[in-house]
Length: 451
Ligand code: PHE
Image (tube, rainbow, N blue to C red; front, side, top):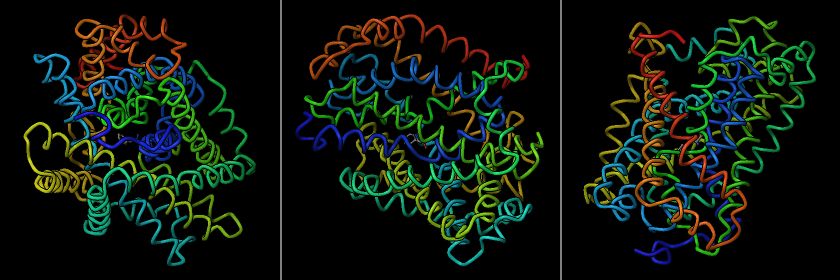
Protein backbone atom coordinates (compact mmCIF):
# COMPACT_ATOMS: atom_id res chain seq x y z
CA UNK A 1 0.00 0.00 0.00
CA UNK A 2 1.37 3.44 -0.73
CA UNK A 3 0.88 6.56 1.36
CA UNK A 4 -1.96 7.93 -0.71
CA UNK A 5 -3.97 4.73 -0.42
CA UNK A 6 -3.46 4.71 3.34
CA UNK A 7 -4.94 8.22 3.40
CA UNK A 8 -2.56 10.97 4.37
CA UNK A 9 -2.93 13.84 6.78
CA UNK A 10 -4.35 17.02 5.35
CA UNK A 11 -1.13 18.91 6.00
CA UNK A 12 1.65 19.73 8.40
CA UNK A 13 -0.60 21.23 11.06
CA UNK A 14 -2.95 18.26 10.92
CA UNK A 15 -0.01 15.93 11.29
CA UNK A 16 1.52 17.83 14.20
CA UNK A 17 -1.78 18.10 16.07
CA UNK A 18 -2.63 14.45 15.60
CA UNK A 19 0.73 13.10 16.65
CA UNK A 20 0.87 15.58 19.53
CA UNK A 21 -2.64 14.41 20.45
CA UNK A 22 -1.31 10.89 20.72
CA UNK A 23 1.88 11.93 22.49
CA UNK A 24 0.23 14.21 25.04
CA UNK A 25 -1.72 12.09 27.44
CA UNK A 26 -1.59 10.62 30.89
CA UNK A 27 2.16 10.30 30.42
CA UNK A 28 2.53 14.06 30.60
CA UNK A 29 -0.12 14.91 33.14
CA UNK A 30 -0.26 11.93 35.45
CA UNK A 31 3.07 10.12 35.04
CA UNK A 32 5.64 12.87 34.57
CA UNK A 33 4.83 14.82 37.77
CA UNK A 34 4.87 11.79 40.05
CA UNK A 35 8.18 10.56 38.64
CA UNK A 36 9.70 14.03 38.88
CA UNK A 37 8.54 14.28 42.51
CA UNK A 38 9.89 10.83 43.33
CA UNK A 39 13.20 10.89 41.49
CA UNK A 40 14.77 14.16 42.44
CA UNK A 41 12.75 17.15 41.19
CA UNK A 42 14.99 19.56 39.25
CA UNK A 43 17.60 16.96 38.46
CA UNK A 44 14.95 14.66 37.01
CA UNK A 45 13.60 17.52 34.91
CA UNK A 46 17.08 18.30 33.59
CA UNK A 47 17.93 14.69 32.75
CA UNK A 48 14.54 14.24 31.13
CA UNK A 49 14.88 17.28 28.87
CA UNK A 50 18.41 16.31 27.82
CA UNK A 51 17.30 12.77 26.97
CA UNK A 52 14.20 13.93 25.12
CA UNK A 53 15.98 16.37 22.84
CA UNK A 54 18.84 14.01 22.03
CA UNK A 55 17.87 10.32 22.15
CA UNK A 56 14.15 10.98 22.06
CA UNK A 57 14.41 13.22 19.04
CA UNK A 58 16.63 10.74 17.20
CA UNK A 59 14.33 7.80 17.84
CA UNK A 60 11.14 9.68 16.95
CA UNK A 61 12.69 10.78 13.69
CA UNK A 62 14.01 7.31 12.87
CA UNK A 63 10.67 5.59 13.46
CA UNK A 64 8.70 8.21 11.57
CA UNK A 65 11.06 7.99 8.61
CA UNK A 66 10.86 4.19 8.53
CA UNK A 67 7.06 4.42 8.58
CA UNK A 68 6.92 7.00 5.82
CA UNK A 69 9.48 5.26 3.67
CA UNK A 70 7.66 1.94 3.71
CA UNK A 71 4.11 3.28 4.05
CA UNK A 72 3.51 0.47 6.51
CA UNK A 73 2.98 -0.26 10.19
CA UNK A 74 5.89 -1.48 12.33
CA UNK A 75 5.32 -5.19 11.69
CA UNK A 76 5.24 -4.84 7.94
CA UNK A 77 7.85 -2.05 7.76
CA UNK A 78 10.75 -4.08 9.16
CA UNK A 79 9.95 -7.08 6.98
CA UNK A 80 9.57 -4.85 3.96
CA UNK A 81 13.08 -3.45 4.29
CA UNK A 82 14.66 -6.75 5.25
CA UNK A 83 12.87 -10.12 5.31
CA UNK A 84 14.92 -11.49 8.20
CA UNK A 85 14.05 -8.52 10.42
CA UNK A 86 10.30 -9.08 10.44
CA UNK A 87 10.36 -10.27 14.06
CA UNK A 88 11.55 -6.85 15.20
CA UNK A 89 8.27 -5.31 14.23
CA UNK A 90 6.57 -7.78 16.55
CA UNK A 91 8.55 -6.53 19.54
CA UNK A 92 7.42 -2.98 18.87
CA UNK A 93 3.86 -4.07 18.30
CA UNK A 94 3.55 -6.18 21.42
CA UNK A 95 4.45 -3.33 23.79
CA UNK A 96 1.22 -1.30 23.50
CA UNK A 97 -0.77 -4.47 24.19
CA UNK A 98 0.66 -4.43 27.71
CA UNK A 99 0.31 -0.70 28.17
CA UNK A 100 -3.33 -0.37 27.15
CA UNK A 101 -4.71 -2.24 30.19
CA UNK A 102 -3.08 -0.18 32.90
CA UNK A 103 -3.54 3.01 30.87
CA UNK A 104 -7.27 2.28 30.99
CA UNK A 105 -7.17 1.82 34.76
CA UNK A 106 -5.80 5.35 35.16
CA UNK A 107 -8.27 6.55 32.50
CA UNK A 108 -10.97 5.06 34.73
CA UNK A 109 -9.69 7.05 37.73
CA UNK A 110 -9.90 10.21 35.62
CA UNK A 111 -13.50 9.42 34.67
CA UNK A 112 -14.42 8.79 38.30
CA UNK A 113 -12.96 12.14 39.37
CA UNK A 114 -14.81 13.85 36.57
CA UNK A 115 -18.06 12.31 37.78
CA UNK A 116 -17.30 13.34 41.37
CA UNK A 117 -16.83 16.97 40.31
CA UNK A 118 -19.99 16.84 38.19
CA UNK A 119 -21.97 15.75 41.21
CA UNK A 120 -20.67 18.50 43.49
CA UNK A 121 -18.05 16.39 45.25
CA UNK A 122 -15.15 18.88 45.05
CA UNK A 123 -14.72 19.08 48.84
CA UNK A 124 -15.08 15.35 49.33
CA UNK A 125 -12.40 14.64 46.68
CA UNK A 126 -9.95 16.91 48.53
CA UNK A 127 -10.06 14.88 51.74
CA UNK A 128 -6.82 13.12 52.67
CA UNK A 129 -8.17 9.62 52.50
CA UNK A 130 -10.46 10.04 49.50
CA UNK A 131 -8.13 8.63 46.85
CA UNK A 132 -6.90 5.64 48.82
CA UNK A 133 -10.46 4.92 49.91
CA UNK A 134 -11.66 4.97 46.33
CA UNK A 135 -8.94 2.83 44.76
CA UNK A 136 -9.25 0.20 47.45
CA UNK A 137 -12.85 -0.47 46.39
CA UNK A 138 -13.25 -3.64 44.41
CA UNK A 139 -15.95 -3.02 41.85
CA UNK A 140 -16.22 0.73 41.25
CA UNK A 141 -12.73 1.33 39.82
CA UNK A 142 -13.23 -1.72 37.60
CA UNK A 143 -16.53 -0.38 36.32
CA UNK A 144 -14.94 2.98 35.37
CA UNK A 145 -12.04 1.15 33.74
CA UNK A 146 -14.48 -0.83 31.63
CA UNK A 147 -16.26 2.39 30.61
CA UNK A 148 -12.93 3.84 29.53
CA UNK A 149 -12.01 0.69 27.59
CA UNK A 150 -15.37 0.73 25.81
CA UNK A 151 -15.02 4.41 24.86
CA UNK A 152 -11.55 3.85 23.40
CA UNK A 153 -12.57 0.78 21.44
CA UNK A 154 -15.55 2.60 19.99
CA UNK A 155 -13.34 5.37 18.61
CA UNK A 156 -10.93 2.86 17.13
CA UNK A 157 -13.70 2.00 14.65
CA UNK A 158 -13.84 5.62 13.48
CA UNK A 159 -10.25 5.66 12.20
CA UNK A 160 -7.75 8.50 11.78
CA UNK A 161 -10.28 11.26 11.18
CA UNK A 162 -12.02 10.64 14.49
CA UNK A 163 -8.75 10.96 16.35
CA UNK A 164 -7.83 14.15 14.53
CA UNK A 165 -11.13 15.82 15.41
CA UNK A 166 -11.07 14.89 19.08
CA UNK A 167 -7.54 16.09 19.70
CA UNK A 168 -7.86 19.33 17.75
CA UNK A 169 -10.73 20.25 20.01
CA UNK A 170 -9.46 19.32 23.46
CA UNK A 171 -5.72 19.83 23.45
CA UNK A 172 -5.34 23.59 23.14
CA UNK A 173 -7.95 24.13 25.86
CA UNK A 174 -6.17 21.68 28.13
CA UNK A 175 -2.87 23.50 27.59
CA UNK A 176 -4.38 26.87 28.53
CA UNK A 177 -6.29 25.56 31.55
CA UNK A 178 -3.21 23.74 32.84
CA UNK A 179 -1.21 26.92 32.58
CA UNK A 180 -3.82 28.83 34.58
CA UNK A 181 -3.88 26.14 37.28
CA UNK A 182 -0.05 26.10 37.32
CA UNK A 183 0.08 29.86 37.87
CA UNK A 184 -2.41 29.54 40.71
CA UNK A 185 -0.43 26.65 42.24
CA UNK A 186 2.94 28.34 42.23
CA UNK A 187 1.54 31.45 43.88
CA UNK A 188 0.15 29.58 46.92
CA UNK A 189 1.81 30.17 50.28
CA UNK A 190 4.60 27.66 50.87
CA UNK A 191 4.89 26.61 47.26
CA UNK A 192 8.17 28.44 46.66
CA UNK A 193 10.11 25.58 48.25
CA UNK A 194 8.36 23.22 45.87
CA UNK A 195 9.12 25.43 42.92
CA UNK A 196 12.80 25.40 43.84
CA UNK A 197 12.72 21.62 44.26
CA UNK A 198 11.19 21.26 40.80
CA UNK A 199 13.27 23.78 38.90
CA UNK A 200 16.72 23.81 40.48
CA UNK A 201 18.74 20.65 39.85
CA UNK A 202 20.18 19.30 43.08
CA UNK A 203 22.84 16.68 42.45
CA UNK A 204 22.32 15.24 45.92
CA UNK A 205 18.97 13.97 44.67
CA UNK A 206 20.54 12.20 41.72
CA UNK A 207 20.61 8.43 41.56
CA UNK A 208 20.86 5.89 38.81
CA UNK A 209 17.10 5.54 39.02
CA UNK A 210 16.80 9.17 37.93
CA UNK A 211 18.17 8.15 34.53
CA UNK A 212 16.22 4.88 34.32
CA UNK A 213 12.95 6.61 35.21
CA UNK A 214 13.60 9.56 32.90
CA UNK A 215 14.45 7.26 30.02
CA UNK A 216 11.32 5.16 30.51
CA UNK A 217 9.26 8.34 30.72
CA UNK A 218 10.82 9.61 27.50
CA UNK A 219 9.76 6.47 25.62
CA UNK A 220 6.32 6.52 27.12
CA UNK A 221 5.60 10.18 26.64
CA UNK A 222 6.94 10.47 23.09
CA UNK A 223 5.21 7.21 22.12
CA UNK A 224 8.54 5.68 21.05
CA UNK A 225 9.14 1.95 20.52
CA UNK A 226 5.47 1.07 20.28
CA UNK A 227 4.94 1.00 16.55
CA UNK A 228 2.89 4.20 16.88
CA UNK A 229 5.29 6.54 15.14
CA UNK A 230 5.70 4.07 12.28
CA UNK A 231 1.95 4.10 11.80
CA UNK A 232 1.67 7.89 11.83
CA UNK A 233 4.72 8.14 9.61
CA UNK A 234 3.06 5.84 7.11
CA UNK A 235 0.13 8.25 6.90
CA UNK A 236 2.46 11.23 6.52
CA UNK A 237 2.48 12.98 3.20
CA UNK A 238 5.91 13.02 1.49
CA UNK A 239 5.75 16.82 1.31
CA UNK A 240 5.47 17.46 5.04
CA UNK A 241 8.72 18.74 6.56
CA UNK A 242 9.69 15.97 8.94
CA UNK A 243 12.41 17.62 10.98
CA UNK A 244 10.46 20.71 11.86
CA UNK A 245 7.20 18.80 12.51
CA UNK A 246 8.94 16.53 14.98
CA UNK A 247 10.60 19.45 16.69
CA UNK A 248 7.22 21.07 17.26
CA UNK A 249 5.66 17.85 18.52
CA UNK A 250 8.50 17.50 21.04
CA UNK A 251 8.18 21.08 22.21
CA UNK A 252 4.49 20.53 22.77
CA UNK A 253 4.99 17.26 24.60
CA UNK A 254 7.77 18.49 26.88
CA UNK A 255 5.89 21.76 27.43
CA UNK A 256 2.73 20.07 28.68
CA UNK A 257 4.69 17.75 30.97
CA UNK A 258 6.60 20.73 32.35
CA UNK A 259 3.38 22.63 33.05
CA UNK A 260 1.82 19.57 34.68
CA UNK A 261 4.82 19.41 37.01
CA UNK A 262 4.34 23.09 37.83
CA UNK A 263 0.71 22.46 38.58
CA UNK A 264 1.35 19.58 40.95
CA UNK A 265 4.81 19.65 42.59
CA UNK A 266 4.77 23.11 44.20
CA UNK A 267 1.23 22.35 45.37
CA UNK A 268 2.47 19.23 47.15
CA UNK A 269 4.73 21.48 49.24
CA UNK A 270 2.05 24.04 49.82
CA UNK A 271 -0.69 21.61 50.85
CA UNK A 272 1.28 18.97 52.72
CA UNK A 273 4.16 20.98 54.12
CA UNK A 274 6.85 19.46 51.87
CA UNK A 275 6.54 16.10 53.58
CA UNK A 276 8.87 13.69 51.69
CA UNK A 277 6.25 10.95 51.96
CA UNK A 278 3.88 13.16 49.95
CA UNK A 279 6.49 13.49 47.19
CA UNK A 280 6.70 9.72 47.10
CA UNK A 281 2.99 9.23 46.59
CA UNK A 282 3.51 7.48 43.24
CA UNK A 283 0.66 6.93 40.78
CA UNK A 284 -1.87 8.65 43.05
CA UNK A 285 -0.01 11.98 43.27
CA UNK A 286 -2.14 13.92 40.79
CA UNK A 287 -5.38 12.57 42.25
CA UNK A 288 -4.38 13.44 45.80
CA UNK A 289 -2.86 16.86 45.16
CA UNK A 290 -5.00 18.57 42.53
CA UNK A 291 -8.31 18.20 44.37
CA UNK A 292 -6.74 20.12 47.26
CA UNK A 293 -5.73 22.88 44.85
CA UNK A 294 -9.23 23.00 43.36
CA UNK A 295 -10.84 23.03 46.82
CA UNK A 296 -8.88 26.15 47.69
CA UNK A 297 -9.92 27.98 44.49
CA UNK A 298 -12.92 30.13 43.80
CA UNK A 299 -15.07 28.13 41.34
CA UNK A 300 -12.83 25.16 42.13
CA UNK A 301 -15.64 22.69 41.47
CA UNK A 302 -16.16 23.93 37.93
CA UNK A 303 -12.43 24.21 37.23
CA UNK A 304 -11.81 20.71 38.62
CA UNK A 305 -14.62 19.24 36.54
CA UNK A 306 -13.38 20.98 33.39
CA UNK A 307 -9.83 19.86 34.08
CA UNK A 308 -10.76 16.21 34.49
CA UNK A 309 -12.90 16.14 31.37
CA UNK A 310 -10.03 17.60 29.34
CA UNK A 311 -7.59 15.11 30.81
CA UNK A 312 -10.10 12.46 29.85
CA UNK A 313 -9.92 13.63 26.21
CA UNK A 314 -6.12 13.69 26.28
CA UNK A 315 -6.10 10.19 27.76
CA UNK A 316 -8.69 8.98 25.29
CA UNK A 317 -6.79 10.15 22.21
CA UNK A 318 -3.68 8.42 23.55
CA UNK A 319 -5.57 5.25 24.42
CA UNK A 320 -7.07 5.21 20.95
CA UNK A 321 -3.68 5.32 19.31
CA UNK A 322 -2.34 2.69 21.72
CA UNK A 323 -5.32 0.49 20.82
CA UNK A 324 -4.77 1.12 17.11
CA UNK A 325 -1.17 0.01 17.45
CA UNK A 326 -2.24 -3.04 19.42
CA UNK A 327 -4.81 -4.21 16.92
CA UNK A 328 -2.28 -3.67 14.10
CA UNK A 329 -0.36 -6.49 15.78
CA UNK A 330 -3.22 -8.89 15.10
CA UNK A 331 -4.28 -7.43 11.76
CA UNK A 332 -0.84 -7.14 10.17
CA UNK A 333 0.85 -9.94 12.05
CA UNK A 334 -1.84 -12.59 11.88
CA UNK A 335 -4.06 -11.32 9.07
CA UNK A 336 -7.10 -11.13 11.33
CA UNK A 337 -10.04 -8.84 10.61
CA UNK A 338 -10.38 -5.52 12.38
CA UNK A 339 -13.40 -6.77 14.28
CA UNK A 340 -11.68 -9.95 15.48
CA UNK A 341 -8.56 -7.97 16.44
CA UNK A 342 -10.65 -5.54 18.48
CA UNK A 343 -12.42 -8.41 20.22
CA UNK A 344 -9.12 -10.07 21.13
CA UNK A 345 -7.75 -6.77 22.37
CA UNK A 346 -10.86 -6.18 24.50
CA UNK A 347 -10.32 -9.55 26.20
CA UNK A 348 -6.59 -9.07 26.81
CA UNK A 349 -7.23 -5.58 28.17
CA UNK A 350 -9.81 -6.82 30.65
CA UNK A 351 -7.71 -9.75 31.80
CA UNK A 352 -4.75 -7.50 32.65
CA UNK A 353 -6.64 -4.37 33.72
CA UNK A 354 -8.66 -6.06 36.45
CA UNK A 355 -5.60 -7.29 38.43
CA UNK A 356 -3.92 -3.88 37.92
CA UNK A 357 -6.94 -2.22 39.48
CA UNK A 358 -7.25 -4.75 42.30
CA UNK A 359 -3.56 -4.21 43.08
CA UNK A 360 -4.53 -0.96 44.82
CA UNK A 361 -7.01 -2.68 47.16
CA UNK A 362 -7.95 -6.30 47.54
CA UNK A 363 -4.63 -7.49 46.09
CA UNK A 364 -2.36 -4.77 47.44
CA UNK A 365 -0.15 -7.41 49.02
CA UNK A 366 0.58 -9.03 45.67
CA UNK A 367 3.98 -8.08 44.29
CA UNK A 368 5.81 -9.06 41.12
CA UNK A 369 9.59 -8.52 41.25
CA UNK A 370 8.90 -6.43 44.35
CA UNK A 371 6.44 -4.12 42.58
CA UNK A 372 2.68 -3.68 42.75
CA UNK A 373 0.80 -5.13 39.76
CA UNK A 374 0.30 -1.87 37.84
CA UNK A 375 3.88 -0.77 38.56
CA UNK A 376 5.11 -4.13 37.30
CA UNK A 377 3.47 -3.70 33.89
CA UNK A 378 4.64 -0.11 33.78
CA UNK A 379 8.23 -1.12 34.58
CA UNK A 380 8.32 -4.09 32.20
CA UNK A 381 7.09 -2.06 29.27
CA UNK A 382 8.94 1.22 29.82
CA UNK A 383 12.19 0.10 31.38
CA UNK A 384 12.72 -3.31 29.76
CA UNK A 385 10.76 -3.86 26.54
CA UNK A 386 11.03 -0.33 25.14
CA UNK A 387 14.81 -0.07 25.54
CA UNK A 388 15.09 -3.49 23.85
CA UNK A 389 12.88 -2.39 20.95
CA UNK A 390 14.72 0.92 20.62
CA UNK A 391 18.12 -0.75 20.74
CA UNK A 392 17.12 -3.16 17.99
CA UNK A 393 15.78 -0.28 15.89
CA UNK A 394 19.12 1.55 16.19
CA UNK A 395 21.02 -1.59 15.18
CA UNK A 396 18.61 -2.20 12.32
CA UNK A 397 19.13 1.29 10.98
CA UNK A 398 22.89 1.37 11.42
CA UNK A 399 23.63 -2.16 10.22
CA UNK A 400 20.79 -3.27 7.98
CA UNK A 401 19.11 -0.42 6.11
CA UNK A 402 21.87 2.13 6.61
CA UNK A 403 21.60 5.59 8.18
CA UNK A 404 21.66 7.07 4.68
CA UNK A 405 18.24 5.64 3.89
CA UNK A 406 16.71 7.53 6.82
CA UNK A 407 18.62 10.70 6.00
CA UNK A 408 17.36 10.60 2.42
CA UNK A 409 13.79 10.05 3.58
CA UNK A 410 13.98 13.10 5.87
CA UNK A 411 15.61 15.21 3.18
CA UNK A 412 13.01 14.44 0.56
CA UNK A 413 10.63 16.86 2.28
CA UNK A 414 12.94 19.53 3.68
CA UNK A 415 16.11 20.33 5.51
CA UNK A 416 17.89 18.03 7.92
CA UNK A 417 19.88 20.41 10.08
CA UNK A 418 20.75 17.87 12.75
CA UNK A 419 21.94 15.21 10.31
CA UNK A 420 25.35 14.79 11.96
CA UNK A 421 23.96 14.59 15.45
CA UNK A 422 21.38 12.09 14.25
CA UNK A 423 23.96 9.88 12.58
CA UNK A 424 26.29 9.77 15.57
CA UNK A 425 23.47 9.22 18.04
CA UNK A 426 21.75 6.43 16.19
CA UNK A 427 24.99 4.62 15.34
CA UNK A 428 26.95 4.89 18.58
CA UNK A 429 25.53 6.93 21.45
CA UNK A 430 21.99 5.58 21.64
CA UNK A 431 22.88 1.86 21.34
CA UNK A 432 25.64 2.12 23.96
CA UNK A 433 23.47 4.11 26.34
CA UNK A 434 20.43 1.88 25.88
CA UNK A 435 22.48 -1.24 26.48
CA UNK A 436 23.89 0.09 29.74
CA UNK A 437 20.48 1.15 31.02
CA UNK A 438 18.86 -2.08 29.95
CA UNK A 439 21.39 -4.32 31.63
CA UNK A 440 21.23 -2.27 34.82
CA UNK A 441 17.42 -2.30 34.88
CA UNK A 442 17.34 -6.05 34.48
CA UNK A 443 20.01 -6.64 37.12
CA UNK A 444 18.22 -4.36 39.54
CA UNK A 445 14.80 -5.92 38.88
CA UNK A 446 16.30 -9.34 39.58
CA UNK A 447 17.80 -8.04 42.77
CA UNK A 448 21.48 -8.35 41.74
CA UNK A 449 22.28 -4.67 42.14
CA UNK A 450 20.67 -1.88 44.11
CA UNK A 451 20.01 1.38 42.33
N1 PHE B 1 2.44 9.22 24.93
C1 PHE B 1 1.21 8.93 25.58
C2 PHE B 1 1.16 9.61 26.91
O1 PHE B 1 2.02 10.35 27.25
C3 PHE B 1 1.03 7.47 25.78
C4 PHE B 1 0.99 6.81 24.50
C5 PHE B 1 1.95 5.94 24.20
C6 PHE B 1 0.04 7.10 23.62
C7 PHE B 1 1.94 5.36 22.97
C8 PHE B 1 0.01 6.54 22.43
C9 PHE B 1 0.97 5.67 22.11
O2 PHE B 1 0.23 9.43 27.64
